[in-house]
Image (cartoon, rainbow, N blue to C red; front, side, top):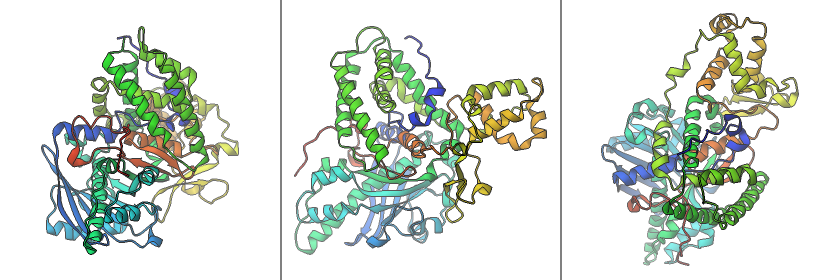
Length: 563
């Protein structure tokens, strides 16, 4: 195997590229389902006490090899006028918690008084996540009505919407009193980041499909009829919708070591694949089949947002170019995957390049999958500032990592047009206009480029051999950025190499990057700062999950469904 260099962070860590990432084998949803299938987890509906209006309580339980987890769902019949994607909403069609173990009657009673309240409630360390979801206005009633009449819902409507409910928040890691990440991080099933949240969403999708069938059954029974069973292929085509806003964007800036580990795993996976000397028949067959399946899925993606419409058009052009290129059988000769990547870099848009990167990883589970175990992070070792570092070495790091920022004219209003702050009402991150709103006094330290340039300027007259500790004794206001510089010096993919307070900033690039690591598809921005996605679309439901179908479900096969 030839050693192919890792891609340069100066290229990878630009927001336009990060905002073009697609799901891959390393995405957290896919990591979870492979584990569940490999370990043979068992699932059961422990409780399902919900009436014809969709109100009541359900418990769906997942039994792993060592531990059991239960999704507790509180279903509500929310009036349409109260249904909202906004984080400031106070009522939802369903609210959930992922419980550590099997809940008792007392646990459910306690949680019934808190989970439906979400932020206004409080939970305990026995709860691992808290979430909520709303029904799809376009699809829910249609599916219930059609099934209750003994008919299948319209397949095209199912395709167009893609979900029956969408979550508006999935909270974990200590939120509202739930268990901290440290309490479960040593469990094998949760060692990879966000496995708690991904398990919660997977079980929520199962609950949603059970609920829509349950309500159809009860409606049919009222007239002495028997409802149709939702066609299994149609059921699998339904994912879990999600609306994600600005609250997620600062995560990548606030967790540089973790962010580095995610990107590093993906880059090392690509490096290993590009280093393959040849291509086996099996790898070729998997790759070519998944290109076709992915192309068919992309053809059905929709958006009404100008930015995404343009990106989708370019991606479809790229897909056509890749498909045409593959008819020439380019996977020949020495190091064919490296040659294919080099062609993509010369030929495709950034969006198309990153789509192809994800597909190139697919045939190489034995090379790629173990890298997921290195995607978590313990910040302790890198959090301590190295005070003995010389000013010369610190300046060198600044020039290497933040050269773009040092060259930026920060006196230009467009360079500092935005400011990140935390809203008083919801304690959620917000992005405001610095020169139009009175928010600068509340600004959060989420502009590492600007701060690095200020640090560089402050170091200008310091002797090269002085220690960083001496400098910080005089200038403690630079401690936070010195820490970031030193972290990025040891974790090369830790830092976004773009201005995060520029007038040109598109926060959805940060959202999409993080969501791609979750495994989301069908990105549909509704503005430059919030986006709708689909999760687990095409995935086998818990009772039917096997090692065979846990691999490539994210690239749906073209199945014939009932009319």
